[in-house]
Amino acid sequence: MAAISSVLLLAALLAAAQYVLRLLHSFLWVPHRLARRFQRQGIRWPPRSLLSGNAAGFRDLLSVARSKPLASFRHDGVVARATPQYSVWPARYGRPFVYWFGPWPRLVVSDPEIVKAAMTDSTGAYDKSGSGGNNPLARQLIGEGLVGLSGEKWARHRRVISPAFNMERVKAWIPEIAAAASSALDKWQAEGGSRTEFEIDLHKGFHTLSADVISRVAFGSSYEEGKRIFQLQEEQMKLALLAMRTLYIPGFRFVPTKKNRTRRRLNQEIQCSLSKLIEVNGVKCEDSKNLLGLMLSASKAGSEYEMGIEEIIHECKTFYFAGKETTANLLTWATLLLALHQEWQDKARNEVLKVCGKSEHPNAENLSDLKIVTMVLKETLRLYPPAVFINRTATRDIKLGKLDIPAGTRFDFPIVDIQRDPDVWGTDAEEFNPLRFADGKSYHLGAYLPFGIGPRICVGQNLAMVEAKVALAMTLQRFVFTVSTSYRHAPTQMFTLQPQYGAQVIIQKI
Image 1 (tube, helix red, strand yellow):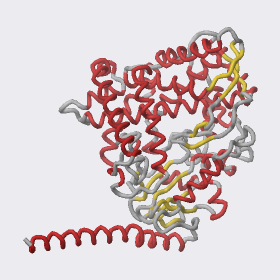
Image 2 (image 1 turned 90 degrees about the vertical axis):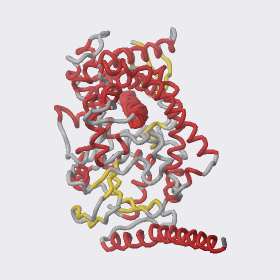
Image 3 (image 1 turned 135 degrees about the horizontal axis):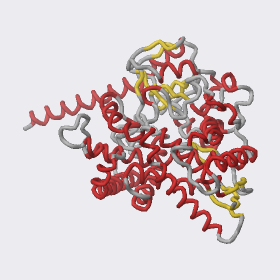
Image 4 (image 1 turned 180 degrees about the vertical axis):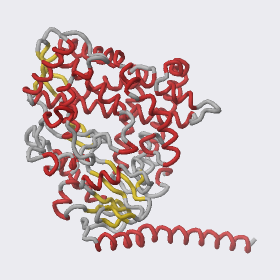
């Protein structure tokens, strides 16, 4: 018996020793080796803690930046307020620079040539860093869906999902999108009662509209059916953001803390709600060949790109959240910008009235004639992109321009900063000027990437742009809007770029 106890004790000590050695290797030797390679290239970083890296400094920057709104509704303070790490640190340490999250380096690169090379690479040298990076608590919001997948599994899911968002199919959804927009605008009109002018928070209104659209066109559902899921995801987003800004200790997700119990409850309820939604709408969706229908078809035995029910649930989580957030925030910022820049609001409205008249909804035939509306949306995406950065991870040692990049390095490409580069966009890069996109004008591929570029370009961009055009055009048909005196300009990075205190405008019925 004593011999057995001794063997077990020895085994436990050996396992513990191996675990400690792995930690020392990950937290001491690997960052030391990477740091020396960066230093040899003149790449610098903020002073960092041995264990947490720059995590504490990152949180301090965010706290200071978010402590008060910008002094006025201008666009030149957005980077410093929403993503101060892309403003304060490069001013101190140059470009490119590194900051560390625990032992993992994040190399921040803003050079459009390097961005283009990495994002359009087809050799497998760069992999998509999963949402939340090394923190499984941060990945719970969107599950193991397309956004966070890589390799063969990503390719298989992409092949199933892409057909749901091709332009012809999206155009067929325009009547559904218009119906959702009309319903939302009717509620705004009713909210005003007999008043000709009244205040409304665009941010809330457009989130409800976008949630209804993604429910209808992708899942054969409605906002009311999916309302509980959206509410749960709002709660989940706050916890995921907290996790993203905290160094994760392996195994911590299994510790029964209050937050972890809440995370588990939210995740289980969302999964249960999605399962019921799939069960209720499954047959109808298979007939209509929307996103859910295509995934359900792929779940059948013998399908070329077979997907299991768990995979479908994860994709539903991704598209419920991403499909709502991206378009809702695009519409919010576009309408705010038109409220601020009245001359462009007048131009866009005159175009809509010329193309669609006072009461006809936009349709598949005339949507391409809304050229000013398109220019406004593109310029909005330049100044206020939904995703403020995009990342890639080097899968092997690579040479990228003059940079010698060790395997495992995560790149951060700060979209919100790159799209303001005066060398690309001119001296007025911080100003709202939709004429930049007149006559279909385009820019350096690595300097304009609100939906990403290359093989992993956002699969839902067609839906986002069509939905935004239809909704903005219909809003212009019904209302004139100006910025409310209660609006405080405070762009904030959540999972997307949002107005921290809402988007209050005064709307006047036409």
